[in-house]
Amino acid sequence: MIGYVTVGVSDMDRAKNFYTDLFADKGAKVMIDAGRIAFIGADPTQPMVAVCTPYDGEDCHRGNGGMIAFAADSKDTAKALYDRAISLGATCEGEPGQRIPDRFYGAYVRDPDGNKLCFYVFG
Image (cartoon, rainbow, N blue to C red; front, side):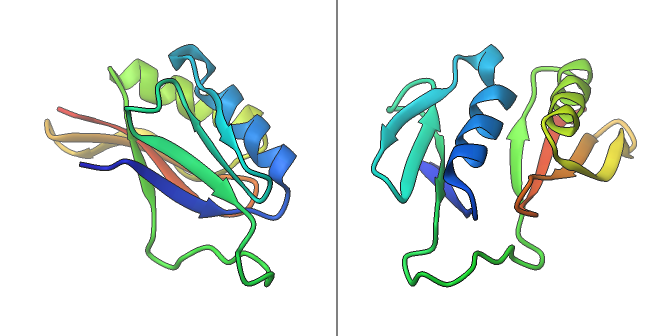
């Protein structure tokens, strides 16, 4: 159901590098680059992440309570994405771990602009 999600950023080059490097193992690349907005994914018919400078020209602001969750194939993959995000300049918002026994494993970071991301597995 999700076509793409958009996060506001302050530095387009940094944001494009962060997300393409983060998801390089999934074949992520900039699919569309229209200057102030870029769509990143592996296939334009699949969900993508869009990074953009705000249309109104004001500074970007992260949402309080807003988060983008990326499904992982396994707990090891969720941890690997967390570790890669940290190595790319993200900050820890919750180390990888079981959050709901036998139901939900998650790892949380904030990207270089403060947008909250989760890498998760049900189970």
